[in-house]
Image (cartoon, rainbow, N blue to C red; front, side):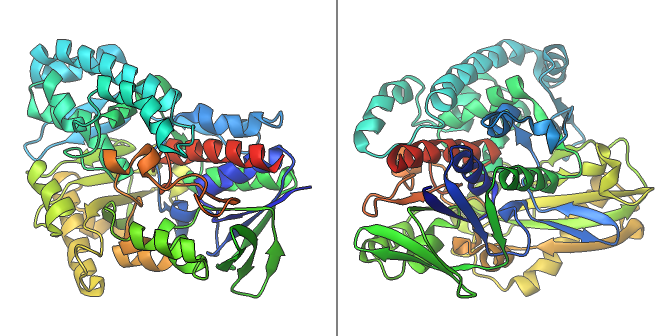
Length: 492
């Protein structure tokens, strides 16, 4: 049997490992942390379960396919449940908007903002459907290894005005500012600035309209656990809590990996789901070509980091849905602070996750689990002491949730903790503590992103947020499909 190692047990790494093992490749996944999941880590505190993220599951068929490859069904290991509304959007003036794929309900929500925008929304949906077909269905799981492949995609990109931003495209269809925000904020969930991210990412709207938004019973961590169970059922091996120290090379080939504990294994191929700068700069430190790549990567634009406050409360809150977006008083100005100026502003926008709205198992009886997430500049733009900044920002975020949703929140808190950019850096070796790797702008997409197979080291591959097509569960699962196709074709 051919032997492969996948570094990192995040969604991308596990999806790739399942594909390889399903095809008969003897595959070992090596994970540095004490639990699998990568960014989909979790904590259990005082009876509450806190998912680290990602918590928005879309395109469930991409996940189900991982089981179907070997004649199994995802329901053997994971229970997926639909979430509705997908999100409730809330603005400081009290306006709310329930975002759903129920056409009549959505039209009613748009009419609450501005009925004259319903026709424009329909045109935007047509645009989103077209770009979804070109950018996701046709290209989302295809590797871009040479510029020729980029040129083949160019006509479709030009047709859809890919040089324009998502916000710009949305604004060309609808006039109401709140609706523009409602239809463009999704890029933030994959690390992109709506004002700069290519309009191709407007496909996310169609992706959600068709596939829905889902929740894994027990938390996103149970989806990771189900993937591990399925991978091991197929004969795969998972090594937890033993960081890879070096990817061993000989000339232009990978020959093995060595871990912190001294474990060493010879391989026919290695795929890294680890941070791309960490992979090239640290794990491949003895490769001359990798050092050159690392020097180029550090000068690229990286997505922001995140500041996440996890908290468990006494009481239940049936009026607060599973997912909320709490917009702040500014949109473009706040985005400029995060992406350009490197400022942690006085104001912020929050993604509020309330999993116990869908799943009572996430909290003790009569209690509720939450997290509030704020995008913040990465450490390269804002190299602050987060031991000082963190508690201040945590207090401000909790105060905002209290002011807008839960008036007695402070008295209800049972447990709380936060996760800062320095934690992304230290726990995940994320360059600058970035939450989503490379920023998804047009000049860092497709061929311009880290390639699914290295250009110089012929049996070294990449999977996950840093490679094509990018971050988010569908993105990294798509990257696994693209990378698996390359690996299986070249290991045959």
